Length: 255
Image 1 (cartoon, rainbow, N blue to C red):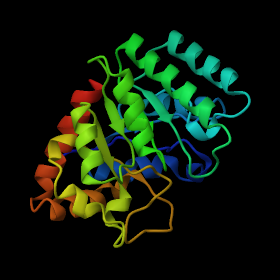
Image 2 (image 1 turned 90 degrees about the horizontal axis):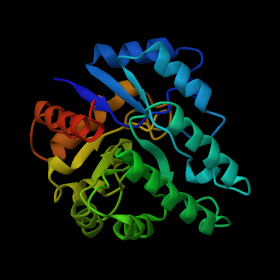
Image 3 (image 1 turned 60 degrees about the horizontal axis):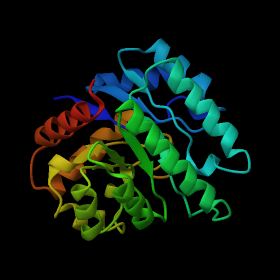
Image 4 (image 1 turned 120 degrees about the vertical axis):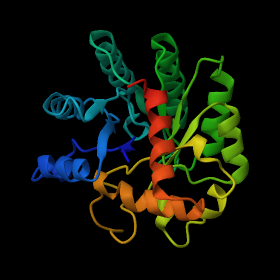
């Protein structure tokens, strides 16, 4: 029984004191692969160092997080694009639109999102979408850009059954994390209607730790709490959740 954490920022400073132990704890629970979405130019070196130190376990993406799309977003995009020309990455990510914190740069976020989607097209690799307070908008943009080649994950999915169906129709997966374990989130009701074939597991570490660790630092080992809750929601066993979500992730990322 093997698990994959498809989305974790294990390279950030919250893990500076015990990063090797965090990865070891995950491995001891058969969470053998962790996919690392980039944030912006300030995180690239730390992310690539982590990947170099754990080449069998950590796999880097390249992209610019929507919260880092500001006045200098052209510079941010140029740096990410240069890296994509230097070496292979497993995906473009994390990219998208965030209208929760600030709507000042919404047009720039939309432009950056479309441009990075086109990098994924050109490189024939998947992309990972951040869609906080923008799920309908990001779905619509992906629909407009979909030419049959696009694939990826709507990270931290927390939408409705209708939104889930639209994502499935686009050929995309949904990343399910700690929010599923929150009592009042309501995500369990949505996922009752979504087949496991469309889901992958993620932590978004160090954020969004599942119950009973809510409010504390999240880490990849906590995939087990998410998988157990998903198994309960789907009225199946954790082995099936592990097998199907791991297969989905490997098929998407190609390794």
